[in-house]
Length: 499
Length: 112
Image (tube, rainbow over all chains, first blue to last red; front, side, top):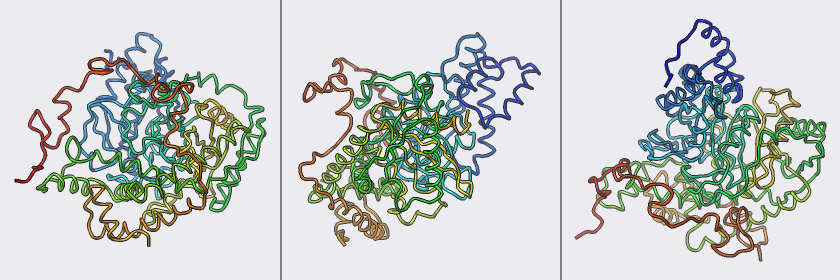
């Protein structure tokens, strides 16, 4: 392996110029620079690690760095480039992975003390596919414990600070994944979305976040929160990059029976198709009370831009929207209470040492291992599933989930995609909502519906507040029609002068 | 108040949590405020609405079939060691808080 490449002085000079552009590096730019030997994957990884060392103490995006693994992969890519072979699509691209995806021999905690020392014996399919496509995994990214949260303040390790304003949250639960891209500590990252956990942090940090259709991307190796809702997706600087990553991770995986047997289109080609004539739905339910006036203004201006690009704006109604939060927090917590039963101090994870009986050992291990929000959700979910309350809460919520799905079925008879704000506000201050779980839950009001219904959604930056905080435009599509929302998002970016 | 202290203790028991006194009182407050909000679901008439448990029974399946035949694509031949080899014994035990090299070890289950 040609890991120790001869470094000509000229190459050094090129590297210097190259490093100045760290903040505008896209996947294609990295791959072609490595391919054309303007830099090496190894020195790029080194630059990103230097950046992480310098800036991450203030941001807190990374939990674990996987330098050996990253440098081995980088050397492999450099050897390919040295031989003049065509690099794979993510060849040499420095990426970060949310710490809810297991990585073989690299500690994986899900942001929880209960998995503080967990060393997975296998790789998550999405991560394995990224690496097989040439990605260099820099490390594991901070998140809310078991992906439960909207601000990243529920991480058992430390909070993440929004790179745009360090006094504010980056959003959650994929807060580290969004902050790492925003602060140029990774070119692309993977996050997971159960109620908005990719899109909300993307919106708060001013990056692109894509939640694919349920079943589009394998969940194998994603530590389960709510299995009927959980999805893996990319956070990137551009829509094109999100499309590139989706291309790699999408598609049936025999290790996940819920990954669908649905063909995967060529997303890069789909991006280039014109948006003229596409019908975009605007639902009044997403522009009502509680929507910040600056967010409204930016999102309305973005919709106007899309109209100027030739999209037809069509009013639609999603009448059950106000019921989405209670539905979501019943179903997600019920599924979580069941999924998190596996943490019992027997096969892996933390065990309380002072217990005399098996039952005491279970209880104390869980008591000490789980944080406050995780316990709150386990309690809520267990209550909703318990005898006497099952019909009133769990079954009722499943029925309302059907009504929400019908809302979207009706709307999608009239339109190709639906445009909304991603979040009712821009990033809030650290500590602002920690003592009021219900107000924290309401931060997900515009994102949970797509999770419940199973459709894809993307958040793209669409301006800033007067305090320079990013605002996100959300585009929701039909099942397995990521192509259309990517196309609309890309058209919007072009109109904004991105790329 | 729909949730009482007794309910909190009962649910904690079901969930295999012990919880401190402080945690119980915070949860009593939080569960009541959250469940009050959830009650708005009762404004909706859901008579004859089928419950929805998942979206994966709609896509990629053969909808002309019923039962497990719908999910035929997800099936595979039942072969020894399946898709991937089982973990070697020591790998499977490497994260165990306590083991004897062959089994997971736990505190005594049966009193005598």
